[in-house]
Every structure is written in C-alpha cells, then in structure tokens.
Length: 311
Image (cartoon, rainbow, N blue to C red):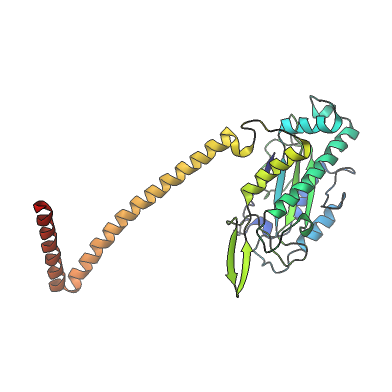
C-alpha cells in the first residue's frame, strides 16, 4: 500500500495552486462519477461535488490569502493487494477487474471505503498537537477510482478531463482524498507539508506542539492494510524496504553529501580570499602597524619551529 501526499504546483504568480478554491480538483475527480460512485466523507456515503467545494472552500478561518487551504492524498494498493482484497471480500480469484459484476465491484469499493476512512484516522493521529487529533476533527472528502489513465500528471495543478484518455491495463483501484488544512472547528491548522515531525516550542508563555510525521503515516497505512485484511507483506514489498526506494534514498544521500562537500570546499576558498582582503585592507589603512604585526607573527612562527626542532 503506497500512501502519498501530493505536492501542489505553483501558478504563474508563484502562489501554490491549493491556496485558492478546490473546484478545479473536484471537477477533475468527477471523471468516473456515477450514481453509485460519488464523493464520501468520514460519516457520509454520498456527498455532491457542489457540497464538497462549498465545505472545503469555506473551511479556512484565520488562513491568509496565499496560504495553502487544502491537500490531496491518495491511497494506492498494488495489483497484488487489490487481488488479495477481492479474494478476501468475495472468496474467489479473478484475473481481470472487468470480470467482476457491478454488484461485486460495489462490494470491493465499499470495503475499500472502510480502509480509506480508517487510514484518515491514521493521518490525523500523526499530527503532533496538544491533544490527539482524530478523523472526526478533519474536513475531508474522498473518491474511489477504478481506473488510471495514460499521461496522468502526478501534481494536482491540472485542469481537464480524462474521460476520453486511454485507460491503463490491470488492477488500478485507488482513492483520492481532498482534506482541508483547518480542522472542523477552524481553530487548528493541520499541514502535512510541515518540515518538522515533532516540535515543541514556547509561544506567549504557552507550550505549543506542531509537526507531522509523513513517513510514519505511510508505514502505518501499510500496517493497517495488513491488520485489517490479514495481509502478509513479503520481503521488499513494503515501500520503505523496496530495493528501488532504498536505492533512491542512497542516491539522494550521496548527492546531498557531494553537494555539502563542494559547499565546504567553496567556503574554504572564500575564507582564504577574505583573509587576504583583510590583510590588504589593514596594510592600506595603517602600513606601519600592519608591517609590525606581520613581523611579530613571523618571529613567533620561527621560534615555534625552533622549539619543535629541539624537541
């Protein structure tokens, strides 16, 4: 199970696109909408797209115009996990998603909805706050999709419709979630894009906790799928133990180290230049004093060398 927090892109003005209305994203997610496949919340099974836009866009008290107002998450089971979910729910194996009847598809989607709602509890729990945050505190709406499409962008800064785009083959069940930055009471901002995992600071004499543990959320979502459906992950199947993920992390670490080494080398050169400039400046400002200081340092160096030789 791969859980992802999608990175918003910036518009032409340099502002993150999720600082405005979520209407473009809701319109995009309507591409597979039907009577039986609508948006749902933590307690509602059917929410209209108009209601989604209204409730997300108006849940922004205390946020400034250029601040991010909402985020998109996705829950992406692998083909193996989807097949297991089908067998676990229906008691039979299928070779193609298309082989399922409409009734069977609704059963699988209904079961996946349960998982998504439980995963949003995991999401809420990973915010570091003065009290435990729960899914009931969130304003979020989710949408289950059965298909993926060719050339589909990763970011959610796009407009348009994928209804006529070619569908990817295989098992592609996944869920999109639009979640507000503010909680239901509009008194607590919850940003999963926080750079900190767990921070405690003092503000106006009060202890304030902040941060979000992104990696822990991803891992716990995998644990949840395993526990909820008695699914056993094989070696290398989890995202953080996958050879490709490990190789990517190692490459990232190597690049970071190389950059840091280059920066340190550049700083050494800059320090040398700074010392030389300082010496020249002193010589111009007070030649007699600069020469006296230089000769004094040279005498010290000669005496130091002599002492080391005698020893």
